[in-house]
Length: 416
Image (cartoon, rainbow, N blue to C red; front, side):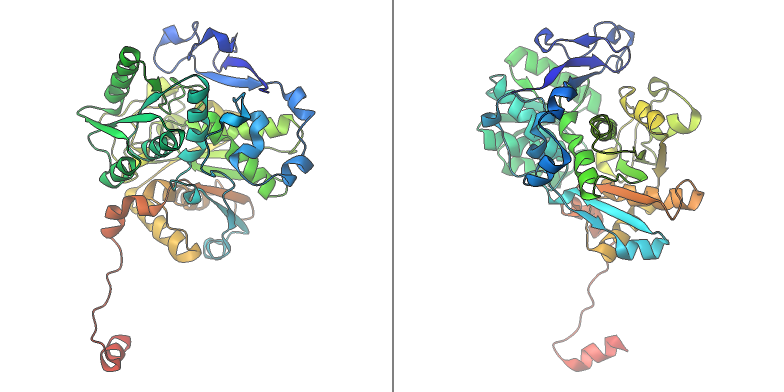
């Protein structure tokens, strides 16, 4: 049984039926790209008759323990690789080094394809099967493509990934191992996305691109991060939740997850959200700092070492609205700050993440220094992808091994 009621425009609150088969609000989308994003809404009263904190605690940790809050009608059709249920690690060593009382790391690198995108594609591919899809296509420059390919392979359907020409080779290799058909497009991410839309219309492929403008349901996987954090902290959300931001869909989704649990009475307070971007690709952070709307900031040629965050515009009001509602914050961090944070997290807590993920720790350190976040506040940093996905970046700054002979004399010389 599905408890989804329909889709609601985040800009004007107009509601649409699922049978309308639209992806953006017919009223607001005429204003331009990014307007009229739709978001699934549920019958929380009916869900509340089934779910309680006791019921959730009795279920096995996974994304699908929250199935009543997912846009899926047939449980038997679930496409899953065991995503979700990732650990919330208390950063004891980091807390001491940063002078904090309570810092936690939500470690999403332990998902099946080593990133939080697995939450998204378990939901999206399940919906694709429910809609009769036998072939899917998506735009991705990295983790989303890896996850899309893996879940398509599990579902037994053909997957085509269109990547911009600057995509990271190691992630392309991962996509290929899952037998995806990959096309490297000479153009921007937006150009690539438009090509996929045209191709899906012409060839009948199901578009699984993780852009809320194209797929209102893709954020439903992300929101389960909020559910898990709430439960793992004994139903006491932290003061702050910090997440990396590209388009900002995951930021908005995580905030939605906390609001849903608050609506259902599972948690009594809401956290403040922080979105972190890399300098040189920080349209949300610029808009936040300058008090501008999402459509007023566009960066030509965005550049950051955090490849998964390399975006020149934020398509929609979803992330900025989440920051306003949560009394949150947006911040940009430099490449040096990101790389320093990557090493600090690995050396302090044994968690090796890609630069995009390390941005959250870099953002925390910057906001601690600015006095935005206090040392006695509880903070959760979400790290979204494994450092093993981009070893070429780590190779540039890792500590080289010391060459010695196979004898104690050589070792003693080095130790001295």
